[in-house]
Length: 489
Image (cartoon, rainbow, N blue to C red):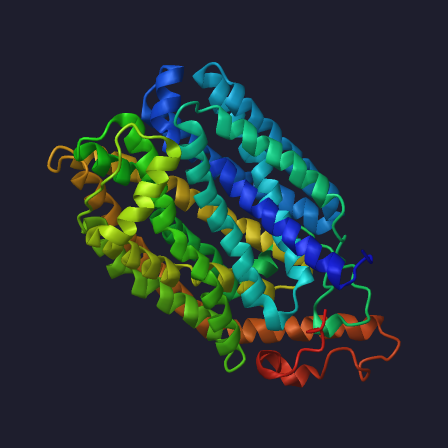
């Protein structure tokens, strides 16, 4: 495997994608097990949900510190440290014998998760040429969605009889991924930027750069949109609870209902895999106009709202063997998709809604890389991730309060349906902020393009007239439409 060659780069991207997925597995295994963990540790579901809320917030705050250190120093040791910390916290969660121990373990895991997410984003952005950012970032975003789904599935499948098992299995997978990461390519900053071709780029972030970052108006909209988007997305971690309540309402036992809820929630979120289409659409439209990625994200998020609202109210007839084995229940649920029209309708609506909202993720990642120089990307991502974490934690916590408040007027599972539907309207301000970003992105891209060319000119023997990425006059439109000199990387 050549150091920095094509195979090594592909291997590195794959490892980073797996790490991103495992991060979300570690968070996703908890919600399907709220009841089981609470019963064993002698607390209510709300106490365990608090641990999930704490994970969202702490990982988001920790990400800022990790990202800043990563933007100033060698990123590989920072990533190894973050991965090791979340593996220890996840294993400890599975071994905890009391609620305080479980909550403490989740806090430790969250701290490490913050480091992995922010620093690995900066590394991946340096591995990808601008021309391919939407597509590759769709895999990056997809890995996180798949991780959440896998966490839901692993939690239900491995944890319905023993809630500790999924934590220990996930921690073991994290150890294996860490070993694989040690063999990845140590990517130089700015390695894929066409403006910096043939130039050693050693710029580092400084504390005085924070006002510069926030002066780019596109950054402000990209950071703020996550607050409302993640309130809606955060509410969706309760999707297994909605399907569990539907199964219990039809007379199924608690054990069967938990497993059925996890399986249905996993199947219905498969539409997130279509984020690849959103990334491709963003890449394609970006070649025509610098507003392309922002417009794709805006339209996708706004168009999804009515489909989500309909999804939660379509009745489902669940036909599975009560008390059956895991394999029997999986086969029965999959058969329902074919034999029960209500289940098939719900699946079609869910897939389409998730396809639309998943256009948000790859284009958000790509725009951060488009409008910021390499030494700022991890920090900008972490600032956005902080707002995301606050929004997601808020959505996760507030929707639980809403469910309890609605239970007086609407018996389960209707209270869950009404609460989830209401929270999807938070996508509307998100779509508006993406549209506002589309109005500023061209100027911010042009400024970053010119800045990188100036750095390259200073450090190139060819001088400002040399071939270091093109004439600054080409500006952002050239980046949107011209052949990328670094496309073969």
